[in-house]
Image (cartoon, rainbow, N blue to C red):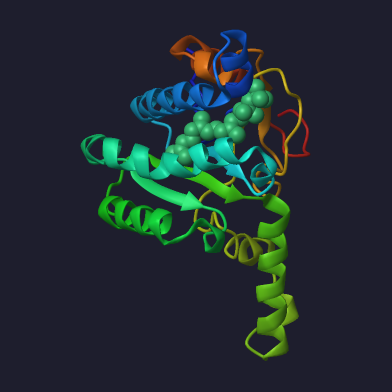
Length: 237
Ligand code: FPP
């Protein structure tokens, strides 16, 4: 039997919540509510399949431009979801980590994130990374600035700035690069997500709207990944 290749790190752009709601004549916020339930289910499925890292795009640095009601709803989700699911994270041995810019989030949100990250830090099953107020260009810029400042203050030699060192300055420090990036809702773009970390990712796009994303959709994506021939710029062996 052929060996099954399971991606170590899966990243998902969870798109189509608004469209899902609109199709039903519902407010967009209800699309996000259903989308967050899908996220819980998909995280459990990935964990059961032995995927080691799952990163999801929950709120981008560009999403602040959405209507206030929608932004307020999305900002309330970390608290609502973490208080509801923290026991499940412990039971399923999942370690939670939020990536993104925390300054703008406010104390109410960051204190619950800090608390659940601390509580789950010794879980050694899947790592669930939630990108919240995340933007890849700013992430890369901040890493560049921090490295430039270390060079300026004679703490670092220019020749020590390797790809590995640069990676260690990103929010995903210590996390391997993304193997498989999934985007739902028939949108074929990256939208400022994990630009450094997806350099050699396999990309998978599906028409399924995020709230409808099921076990079958996940398995189709994993099946497609399994059939890809990853060469990293080399040639077929
Ligand atoms: C994109 O759909 C989705 C988002 C901007 C939000 C995704 C967030 C969740 C699924 C839950 C987040 C969970 C936590 C823990 C914070 P869209 O609104 O752009 O859909 P559209 O393109 O159909 O309008």
